[in-house]
Image 1 (cartoon, rainbow, N blue to C red):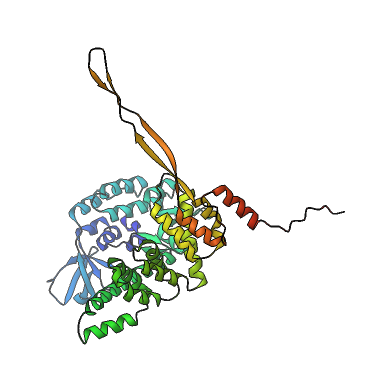
Image 2: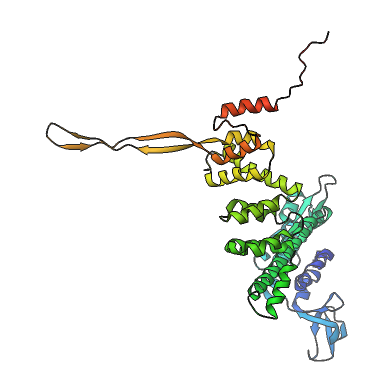
Length: 411
């Protein structure tokens, strides 16, 4: 009866499990030998295990002689497994039998238990049994139950650890990993040569040559770190960053123009941002975005007035009239101030002094921004209405309104 548990079970990873299912119950009392060429032989070894030739008597009395080199390993069937299969002898091959055996084996022999669940599906391929088996999904078009692995492969997915992923995502992950390794190697080399700059020949000149020829964007984060650790390094590092391809170092220049307390370095950064049309546009939008977020962004987020004024001032280096409406709105902002009035003292009829708790007042006060005004006047070709936003808006409407509108009706 057990020979009906079958060919599909021979694909299991643990050979002793498939051996249990591939032979009769009486065979479980014998030894099982796995062949290097594939398959197994069940029987009793009649001679010394150290012999060059094994004499194996099968359960039907046939004696086989096989070279020991052809035997991969001897498989021992656990006693508890033998006991379970002996209890199945003579019983009908039913769904109930295999379901009960799978439950009994599931604690210690999960692969063997799954083999019996597969047999349950063979005998009764219902949706309930397929779901109990797990790892399979029903094709909505054909109704066929297919292994998850096959479905994922049909979708073009690839195995990724314990899950599945797209080839594109895997390629990106591998690329990012290679990039991390390359950055780590670059950082190590920069740190070594930075230290060697102070050394005499031959290390010093070699380090100088390394930095003179350095134009790999992977080096930018480490160079930026060295720059902001000590701005006195700017004279040496900025020319190196300026040689980086395209606009890859623009982020460093933007941060330097916003954060540096060294006016000379900030001006150099602004000049570098003005080199190309693309870098100019990026810088313009960056500074304008800071003002716009302060004016129209999340009101719960406090505005850094120092950053606000710095961005307004930097816009002077990018004479672009598109900034005028935002600058007009930026002339005056408001801030909320909370003040607590001191409590008052009073003397009652008994001569006792009592102190009041006082009151808390909240007021909104205007804050003027001279940097925004200076940039606005620069763009307005001499017009200057100070901090009067209403007059500025009237001027803007008159100056930039389309004046070629024909109001006459056609006759």
